[in-house]
Length: 248
Image 1 (cartoon, one colour):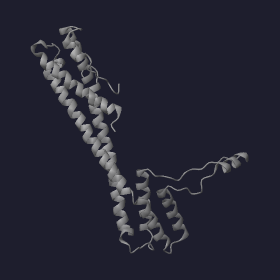
Image 2 (tube, rainbow, N blue to C red):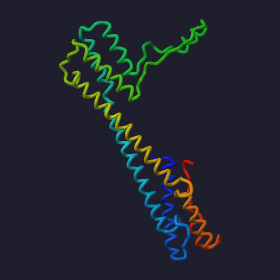
Image 3 (cartoon, helix red, strand yellow):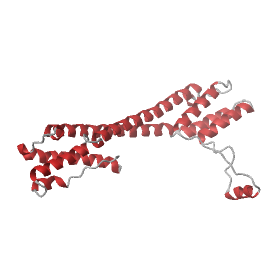
Image 4 (cartoon, one colour):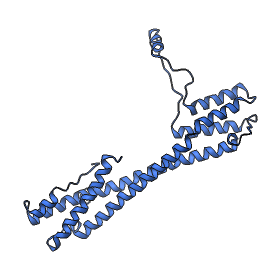
């Protein structure tokens, strides 16, 4: 569902188009001295505003697609990590290696090093004058998952005993997956930046002082009032058209 601000910008553009339709019908009577209020300038402004809305819509769709692709790529990730970890446990690795792997896997799966304290346990510690500080090892953000998986793959590649026969569990396959996940995450970041820039450009066209869509539309309505009069049917045609600055 579109946000109020997104629909507000679209409404401004729709109302400008309606305003221009009335201005065109006024014919030669509409003859402002201010260049930005002339019909040709209004039509150019409308074209630019429509283009900026379209750019935002395209960027929004691209971001949505990138997010969906990332979610799909990461969906089987936790189960794969569990399989890899089990394959590693089945080898003759040292306890130090097992501990290193366990730490990384815990972060990848969002689990704690120790069980979470119950409220009763916290109260008991408080009664003894001890602080119940528990730091979660969960690092489930996409950036964190990619970096922790990179560490996991690097660790596996350094372990001679880790040599599974299953293709998807091999270090080469895991390395390719890591690169793919990182690329999917980068695609989302890039799409978010492009969407943000598109919104900035759209907002500027509509909200900037004096020469933005909202101020130009307001001045156009004032000019129409001055030409035809406040109680004229011509001014009544346009007086109810609203133009709002969304982020000002």
